[in-house]
Amino acid sequence: MLVIPMADKSNYHGEVVVIGGGLAGMVTALELLDAGKRVVMLDAATRDRFGGLALWSFGGMFFVDSPEQRKSRIKDSVDLAMRDWVRYGELDPEDVWPYRWAEAYVNRCTEEVRGWLVDRDVSFFRAVNWTERGYFVPGNSVPRFHIVWGTGEGIITALSPRLEEHEKAGRLQLHFGHRVDELIREAGGIVGCRGTSTDGAFEAHGDAVVIAAGGIAGSHDKVRAIWPRDRWGEPPEPMLNGSIPEADGHLLDRAAALGANVTHLEKMWNYAAGVRHWAPPFPNYGLSLVPGKSALWVNYQGRRFVNPPLVGSYDTLLLIDEICREQKKYSWQVMNRKIANKEFSVSGAEFNPAVREKKLLAFIIRLLKGNGEQVQEFIDHCPDFVTGRGVAELADKMNALTGTRDVDPKLLEREISEYDENIARGRNLQNDDQLRRIAHVRQYIGDRLRTCNMAPIMDASAMPLIAIRTQILTRKSLGGIQVDLDAKVLDKQGNPIPNLFAVGEACGFGGGGMHGLRALEGTFLGGCVYSGRVAARAILSGKGVR
Image 1 (cartoon, rainbow, N blue to C red):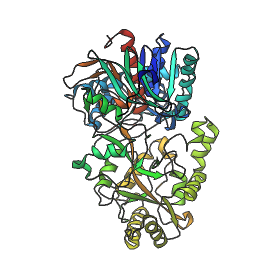
Image 2 (image 1 turned 60 degrees about the horizontal axis):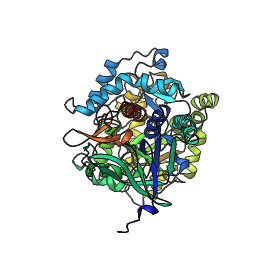
Image 3 (image 1 turned 90 degrees about the vertical axis):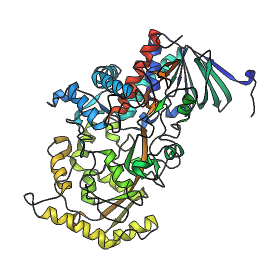
Image 4 (image 1 turned 60 degrees about the vertical axis):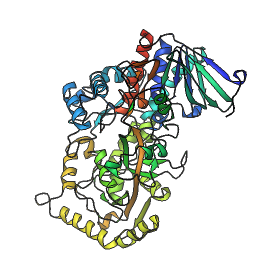
């Protein structure tokens, strides 16, 4: 091993070292800087990716009894939200720190996350979305998914100039292209870190160190190593990466080597409807579709999922469960062009330009007229889209895409015909759980505008048919480094490791896994903001720092 002399290393010094330039790290640093602290911030990515995964996200956030809910006459409360959270996540009260973090977030998210962001010029769309309603385990009792006007990019563009002002003033050292390989421990406490950059080795020292480097979803080697085989069998091959490559779990391993208690990593928040990006920013990068509710969701053979039929926005984990029970762990969504134009949507900032660029008129037109231009863009460019004038042609193209003869055209045609016949019987005689759920979501105005009204698949006026091959896409870690309510990292005996803190996805968004088994959605960006503020508050008050 090559040992580089100290003279050849870059050395950085601040009162606090923040490892990671995603949302959690940005919030932590900004709170400290505004209070007068000097901060060294290290990020493995390049400066144009300042903000991490939040920069690319759609920007939905979970709040309770918010002004937007009240304006829409949605009655919510902390008690109701906490019941939903614990029940849906199957969160065990005896799992002390995750449970306490869930309580803290639910009680304080509207004031300490929404209020903090609004004070920094982040705004929210008036209509509140209703995600994760639950299939067999009840989820969100009321709509709680608040859309950032500007997407996740809008959050980052509101915060980054404030950090850059501190950088110009000399209070903040921002170093990109710096990968931390090791935490430095002296006299029982963490005093800094070391690693490599494009210019060579470096060390950074401070009175406190904050790990804000994300989870494990960006490393499929890591994901496969801890994959819950008792629940999902062997991991899919291939999978798509909906995270960022820097979220590789490396610092979680380094913290564990120093005695930190890393918990619940086997609990992951993956998505079932991933497709390949035709111009990926890094290898194997995928996009997460928002599954259309009127599409027929079938397995790799063209057999419909019926126990239950798969419908998006109800239970993300159930979708993964069902698909991972199959011999081949990918699936297809089958629809026609009319359904696609109305319901097709992609999660993230890139393919939501009206929201990202805050163009209200364009957003309203999209809701009323559909999304036909984007559907055509994906048909033309995305390698996971195929079209056909009939079922036989569609099945041939599906098989050509996968290089197999797995899809049985007669089976697929029968599945489509039976579904369409159920629609044709009329509302009084329909007996299909997918149709019942479509009727249910259309009761809420926010979903009615984006969901077809009992649309058959085989409709001569709605051709061509479209099939989308969807793969498992890794996105977020629900587990991580265990921390107490001050974001201090705990060892396996439950004792704080002096001077060491963790925030955001690195700590399972709080406590080493505050969501439990399932997330009510919108709680990831919110968890980054909240945990970042908690850590900064503790450091400023001297808790866990010696």
